[in-house]
Image 1 (cartoon, chains in turn yellow, cyan, brown):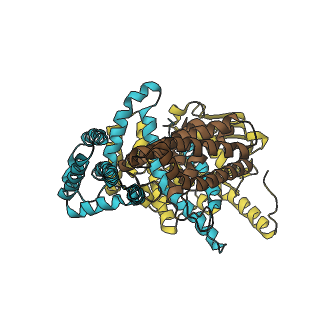
Image 2: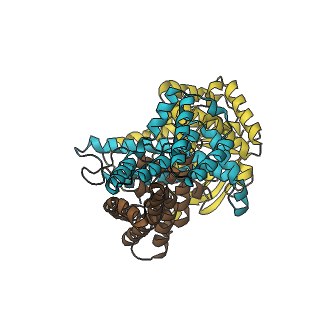
Image 3: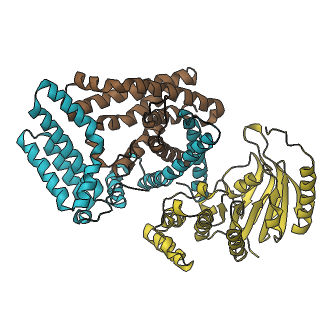
Length: 241
Length: 197
Length: 180
């Protein structure tokens, strides 16, 4: 199966000398990949490295053979990323503008981008959303908009950062169904092992290092055992940095 | 976001925005040079213009002039004291007419149309390095984030009140600035994630 | 580039929010608008160029009809009213405030206070007073007299701008773009 092929070798990220990720080497080819870890384990930074939003301070990151931080234009069709907080992602005041922006970025004319955006909404049974102000949308609807804006650009891989964290149960179920149906490679970051159970492969990050990598059942079982052990111990006193 | 465009749809809404702005510029320039009875004539004309667009519209227009009352009070006191009433009335009339005419354009022109005029006017600035597309994104971002920041600052104040009997004072300004700075970083990243500017 | 644009846009939004947030009491019982505090902060935090651009963007939004000035005012009318001079002076005020913080290499607090006073008061009044004189048909000294009641409040705001800018430099040194 021809998938974008994300490859990291010896990748480190240590802004101002403080190590956030250390020596990550991976090749990601599976269609469904989960990244699990506690808060602050470096999961989000790993996604940002893959998306080319930050450069590794050492080592190499390649997506389809290209440097994602350098070749931004080529990455638009390769990688889409969904931030944890939709409010950090939505740039424009109306739904249609938000959807059209990415299409404009891929070189389409304004009118064509607008038409495609409306078409996309109509196909999802949401034609009436076009002129809606984004702040009138619910959390789940805003996340749906972010996902649509990313999908409109048709990237080969979609990276999602804690996509279920802020959703109520029906919204979460809808999103899970939606993700299941996508032909793209999907990489999901989560602190919650339950949402990663059906992944083809799960990576476990701890303190910026890869501590386990394998089939979901096996990695998540070990992760749960460790989280239970930590939960028993009544200490959360270490300060970061 | 709520705009000052009047929800009462009038004939003036259909006049092209550029034409209204040009008319406003000419009228305001003319008004500055007028004296005496001519000012009264223009003011009467403006009143007729508002009334012609409907009583509800005219009431809305009158409400838009409310911020001027302290200045009218100052003029009344000042010229009452100097005894030069005619001069005071002329100044007040000019001020009211100029502001009312400008408000008329604002009330009868949709936000999108005005932004389109701005973008058209800014086009020659491209030669000075101001990319019109960048300007359009900046306008959109400000429109999008004003209500977001407003809401979150409100939350900060609520969080303050939840733990304090005193009203949140200027101390919420620093966290509000931090919110703006953080949002700016996040959105810059979102822009880069989708190809940048 | 992206960061410049988002900083400019978010600070334009911040100026609006500081004008709209109801009842920020700068001093007990004296509700003064924090909007001109926002203008000062644009300069002292973002620096001259970005600060001035943020204020220009804010004024553009006001001009196209958004009620973002303190008290929910906006539209083209405010640009021909008695306060028009102050509005026109806003971006210059932010620019000067930013320039002082950028160039005058003393600790952030004093530099920000000097910038806020020079930009947010001296420069701003230099624009605002002639504007008032013009619209209200008064001489410059007469108009200056009309503006003096606001001086005390603006001095307090300059002090707050300094405290807030120094506080920011303290908690998030990297965020103070006027010094980076």
